[in-house]
Image 1 (cartoon, rainbow over the protein chains, first blue to last red):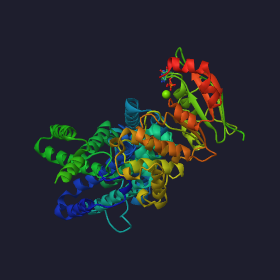
Image 2 (image 1 turned 120 degrees about the vertical axis):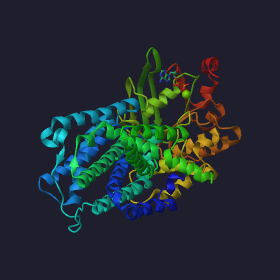
Image 3 (image 1 turned 90 degrees about the vertical axis):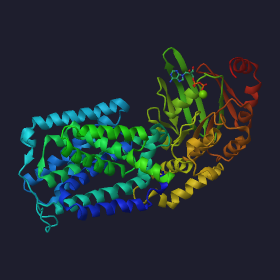
Image 4 (image 1 turned 45 degrees about the horizontal axis):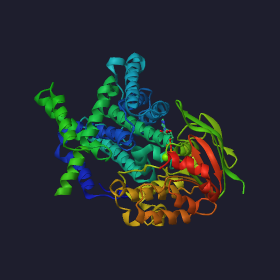
Length: 316
Length: 248
Ligand SMILES: Nc1ncnc2c1ncn2[C@@H]1O[C@H](COP(=O)(O)OP(=O)(O)O)[C@@H](O)[C@H]1O
Ligand SMILES: [Mg+2]
């Protein structure tokens, strides 16, 4: 693994990753909707990587913020505001606002108790969304909202080109932002907190403040991912907030590799492609395919698929 | 010079065990003070209470006439009260330079900085390497901390502590674990400490204590047994009996 102080340097495999996404557009024009969903879940996985992989906060409730962002953005449209980019940012902001007080509850805990507290946030959030049918549409979800053409120009075509490039741009911007933050002294500080919070405190670092910052930024990114999901599918259901979604994003991150930024997006792609293929083959057993993949990746070494690729590359 | 640190009747119990029993201590700016005592006397406990990692049952602490009794440990560090750890407590998965970078960023209030990448912060990187060089650690800068010798880790620990610009330094057995042929690095570093920095040195090595301390406190079972100038203390038959009777 390259050093913490070299995080700002670009490596050429990164170019492959981004060129790959451009190539997807030309190679799989009929799979743009799946590709868009992969991009959105990639962004969602990034949010969990920031919180868990880079800051050591264990969260099983990350989908709560995804759902909050999705509902908030749907509501901006339902209330008559149709400009898509600002509406997505509203989703991110509302998720961040929700995260602040919850962070004060969760971040003082550690280990199993922290996992349980975040699980409780997810469960209570889902139950609240279920009860507040007037706001969330309950089981039926929210639909019947739409957005103005992107940048006043690009219509949301049924073939999904606009959605794809919208999601790709959003994902790339979030990625660049995180990459920058994590390479800055702020990101090095988070790494120190993850590795040895006690020692960071004894260096005079306000550990709680940085954890809260990372947690809130993570929630904003999850909310933005939820917002993009709502905008590109024009639907928000309870499943966007479910424990299943929290677990799915965790599995994606672990499969791809935590604490390495590209891990989440790669895990999201693998997870959703396996999901898509296995659903053709046997809709009931795709979870088994993911389970086998997860066990293999976890057994074969730390660092997920990306870690395995790095090991193979080092040997090569 | 006025008192820099005043600890008043510090008391701490672990169940029935009294780790600190009405401990009083007063150090002035630039003090060179040693605390000695047999194992289990409560010396590390005292460091914990002063630095805030252990919570007091009773008593109060003043730093520069400011009551820091309720201040959390990180705020005490920012106020200039810094401790080192008896057992190395660092970031084993990070490189030596990255370990030091964290201390330098903390000391210069740059932990939250997001303007430029850490690897482009020439100011912080130069300070990092200078701090490593003070203890001749530059050749190890690129090594993972967990894979260098324990004695070298001890020196990194000390280097990080010094990088925080302490005014009051608590050194808990800094020489423990450093092999004989490297102790001179530690001695030189302590020798080179600025004159206005006060330190409290805990060690079993009487040569080290004799060399640096201008006052000694002898502790046993959480109490101050004796306090005074090194020559008086180290020749006091009572102290010798108590210390050598139970100590190493
Ligand atoms: N966290 C703790 N819980 C219970 N007892 C402790 C704890 N820390 C230290 N002690 C006990 O307090 C006494 C003083 O320990 P310590 O301050 O480490 O002694 P010293 O550093 O002088 O050798 C010892 O008897 C030790 O076993
Ligand atoms: Mg001790």
